[in-house]
Structure formats: C-alpha cells, structure tokens
Image (tube, rainbow, N blue to C red; front, side, top):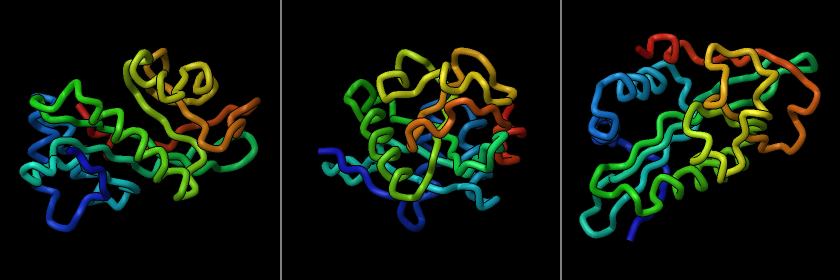
Length: 170
C-alpha cells in the first residue's frame, strides 16, 4: 500500500536521489534542493511504500506569487513531480497531485501553476487557457494554471514571480 504524507525530517537526501533517478539528470534534484535552501518550498509531499517504508514518489509546491492588475495572488508552482521507475503507472503521481492540491487549498493558495503535459495535468483541472494572460518565460500549451479559488484569474493579467531557483534550472 502507498501512503502520502508531508516530507519528514532527514529525508532530503532520499528525495534528492529519487528526483535525480526519476529525471535521469541532476537539474530537477538541484531545483528541489535550491527551493528548499532558499525558503521557497511551501509543501513537500512524499509517497511511501508501506511494504519496505521506501519513498517512491515526491512532489514540491513552491511559493510563486502572481502579480495581477488587481492585486498579488498567493500562487504555488508545482514542480517537480517524481515517481520511481519501478512504481510508475500505478497512480502514485496522480495521488501526489491530488493530495498536494488539497494541501494548497488548506494553506490558502489561490492558484497553482505547472509546466507539463496538458493531457496529464488537464485531468486535474489545469488549463493553458486559464494561464494565457499570465506573463512568464514559459508561455504556451505546456504552461497551465489551476484556480484553487474559482474565478480568481477571470479578466486579469499578471506576472508570475517564480523563485530564483527556477532561473538556475538548465
């Protein structure tokens, strides 16, 4: 059985290894490390396999305000999402997204942003159309938003204020 929970103390090295192996490169693992070190990590969730108590999935939400024509919205960037190769295709990534969005709602996040496959993230309610008026270097169909507070982006444009760690991502 897989359980989802907040990252525990002393698990950062295990998460680093998981993210590195999941992406086959160091960049995303360094992104997680830098977001945490800079104090920009808001919610860090892990998926734990009860059989051997190993971490088999991870998702991070980082503080990413959205400055709009009306005000500053409390936003979060959802990245990266990692699942161990041996556990992919079992719904673990989706479970992490769903649990993470619950945590965002409970934390007062108004909008969540993601850069990824529209077919995958669309099933959770993410939409490039909702994000189209936001100013970001990641424009296009892969840049998507989900309004935790329904209608919060209706009729507004704004600038996404990504944490500095994203600018270091190669």
